[in-house]
Length: 312
Image 1 (cartoon, helix red, strand yellow):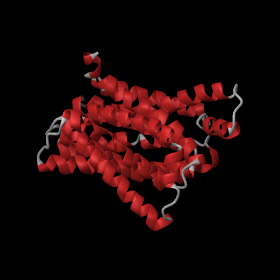
Image 2 (cartoon, rainbow, N blue to C red):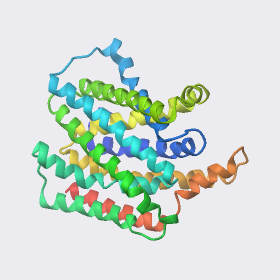
Image 3 (cartoon, rainbow, N blue to C red):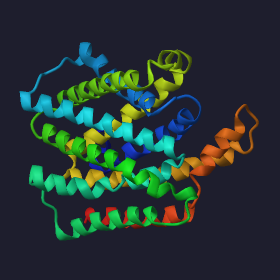
């Protein structure tokens, strides 16, 4: 078991799996519960307090000041990326499409890793990253999607791509200098600070809203969603920590749309047989993920080839 958990490839695949489940649940929250993109961002940021509950049992070794700052900024940037993700979800209900566009992070991370970490890959591995990027771009310019969603959300997702790339680069630097536990604690601290920051932005722009009542009414769902989010973050951070290169992790996480499509297909098939309140809304949400499914599958296959190339 310990050998499996130390296998960076296995751990790297856990993150997109957990996050695909979160994406599907987020769609319902955006459709029925959240008022705007600030609500989801605040809840995601504040939920990162979970690792701090381990403090009485494990303790905390405070690393050097640079590691503290970089880890904290890494967490802050991740939640900022989620702000743009939720904003895109409010623009379109196609989570698979959003994630495929977000996968272009796989091309920016190697560039930033080279500039800031002097991380160099082989020619074949760079070609693999390029192939993964081509797969993501294929979907971006495919005309089989509803209402020109791609062109509408690309400018929004640019923010998510930039901040997620910075988050991965910053945390890679942290884990090269300190332990995983110390790094993840201050990474979580940065996420919490981002949650507080976006809460005050929400108050300024939209007022206090209904966040407290939402938290009370749906706290079980929030615990589930944020636990899955946290598991994904921990898996991603662990993969960054033990992988040969952060660029590899960025490319592996590009397979997330495949998980979204598979989970959506299973849910849609099951839910179509059931009778329950708001059935039409939930069926529409899951059905949206299957729009242009063959084009999505083709793009995912291209990205899988790219992933294989980077592991040669």
